[in-house]
Image (cartoon, rainbow, N blue to C red; front, side, top):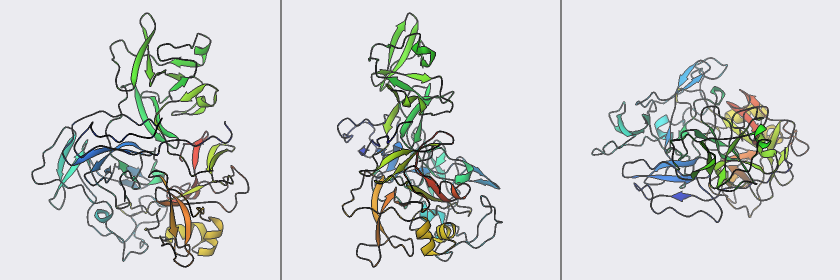
Length: 455
């Protein structure tokens, strides 16, 4: 693996005017490439936005990202929306459901008096009385009789956590398991890639792989836009990705002919290959070989200035200027509506219980916040600095007594582990319930060669 792998990436947001698909795109910074998408019809009042981590997503006329809630099989049942239905309503839940947790259902939830309803946290994207379905955009009837937009038969919502154009704080497209709970997913158009390929959000960017086997694509420095220089010896390890005879170039994708009757895909001027020695899907292992690079529709945004990635025994983790590993706190409550509890506006009882047995000082010792400099600059919609009251874990204001100025990832404070001693240490990785997914901490993985990448 590479030492101190540089964190580079995308900080631009590209916005399309409401209802327009291909006009008025804001140009990204020099050299920054953004994900292309299939230009299907959409109703007036919606737009396509290119965001830092998730590629292209749908947003409403106010720039709020749209989400859906896929049905997820949990430990003791399912949660989420069935197709063409919405189960997110104004029901006020006061007890846990026993879907995820090892605890039985019926236990009183924290801060139950002020706990919001699902509809308050996830406002439905309502359709006007005269709205008409367009393409994959349809209209469903909610339980209260109101009309709600759906895309690809999935009811659509916005998140109260999103404050700015390009925010995607309510959910993720990263690979999830039942340990994560029933997580919301950003809705968006289909990436403009040939049918042979698919795109997945990773810590490093929007990675492209083959659709059937999930084998990552790679490019080689020695190739040109019109010729593959990978000879028979090279092809013992690197397999050219062949294009069917009948396909045509599309978007960023072109085709070259290596020999009579043999065509190879080219992405942004580079022929693409799979690495025969990769031992997992959506791998980045082939990129360790000099001259070879993974293929992305766009890269993830840069980390704060001076931070770097350190090697450890299982992969690579993000660390601050001193190399101390950065951790993310994850939390999804166990009520029927599966509201997230991983941010300062949520009840802090879960976090305090897991990091310090309910004791604030012990929690701060075990998982101290990553302090930000006073001149910290936000990086796109991904990294920012926020004021936190360390005694409550809630947001604070500048000048509040004892308030800390800390780094936040997608609006959520990040932490160190009190047990880590040197760069690359991960003594607190998967700390908590369900390997740190349901209520606990995970290291900020850039790659995890012996598990699933989860940064």
